[in-house]
Length: 217
Image (cartoon, rainbow, N blue to C red; front, side):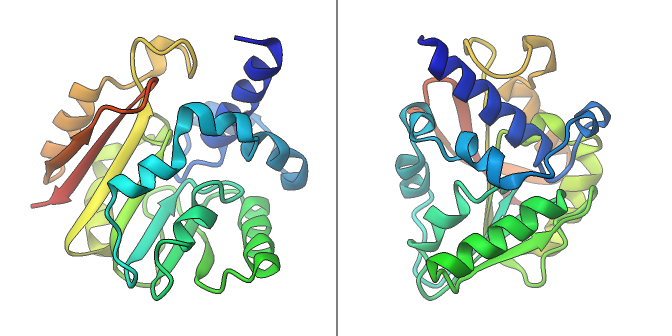
């Protein structure tokens, strides 16, 4: 792996961690006040090679009128892409960092993406204005401090039959957070089951991350 790619990945991961909907205490040590600067790393085309955003979204089988929540949206890497798949629906890009929320709102306005709404989330819930059909959480799960409470609260924002897609780094990936900080996919399933969710689908095409879709029971 080239040094340039390593630097891009490191910056991207740091961003995703700190822009996540619910942050662990240590993530507050980082400053993301300059979203414009961070966007160069977050949206670097190099990320597409391993994140496979088009394949990720296609696997969600979205309907044109779906309401989608991109929790931990950062500068909108997934939010802006999702908007193209729900032309009659809406994408809620949820983030805790106020600067990221402002950045996404401005980015959507500039791009004419009228179906993207930037939302200031809360640490224990996404703070969505409407119930959604799909929730996407990319590299966020392992940063949620109280996952039991968060996912129980999340149910109030889900339509009947809604899906929650969780993508995070697997134990064998050469990138991502230290292995000790990663949550194995078996643990994800265990915790979501305890919070009242069932596995609906699982995809294995991402080289460094697991991708599991849940529905609330």
